[in-house]
Length: 221
Image (cartoon, rainbow, N blue to C red):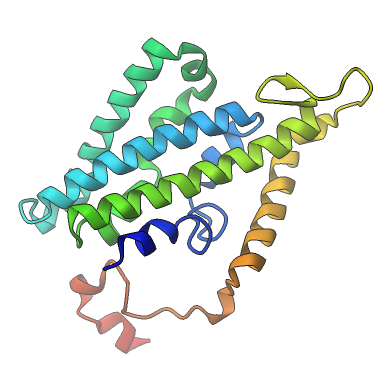
């Protein structure tokens, strides 16, 4: 297994936000400014990396019948840790992220990587996958947040770019502006990655429920 390939896939080709369309709720909610997007991305990456490593280490110990509850407990532990760290050292960011920081626990990116990858692969491969997916998530949030902040507030990471001359377009600080920028970014990244939904076919290979149904669902279809 190529660890470099596992790391790089999450940046563009399988970007969790802009290609796989996962984690769109926090993506749209916290990206009015780039700083919040960066904070959410790094917090999610920390949780994703930590939980993936622990789940990979314990994959032969956790009973299959309770794997999902066990995964959620592990993820929640790392979310609690990062919440405490932000509350103590970066209180402004903690307040800005609000409830979406706690909701990292049920972020489908993290639980999806735990079920589809970390529970089936080595610690090193799981760490590479988690870092790549986390970095891809962070880059997506920073890119969307940067566009929205520059166009909507006339600043970038708090630095004024209007020079007292340009008038910001406040629409981009609102939910409608977030959807517009998100749609634009999805179109651009999908064009660059050559991704085509119509060419993706459902099948047994890669399905996280494959072991449970033994391929029966695919045969019935």
